[in-house]
Image (cartoon, rainbow, N blue to C red; front, side, top):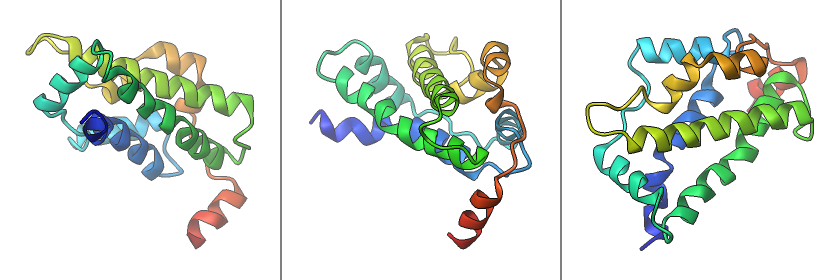
Length: 158
């Protein structure tokens, strides 16, 4: 039963990873998220999924299932950032940026789910978009980093 809820718990994270993957090379991540927000293209959380996430924040059986999702997403986010910048996935700068984005999404999702109905802050992707601290500290989130020549050739052939 516990493993059966994993796809529900990962919906938002999967949507975030997909948004990062589809970001055009000429747009910063924050600009792209702002565009998605203006177009109302960011997913709205399902109330039942929010209930499940709220439970996963405290239930000892669900908590590890929830925490595994961001753990599984970290290498994917690292690969996306490395590919975008023409860096190696072992580059500490890239790994730290990916970990910050990953943690911000997890913490944002938990915070969002724990708010009383009607008082919830913006969804996690929107919070990441409007938070100044990560954008100042981690410029890969705001820089328009064109794909490296190697990355451009591999994405056009794939």
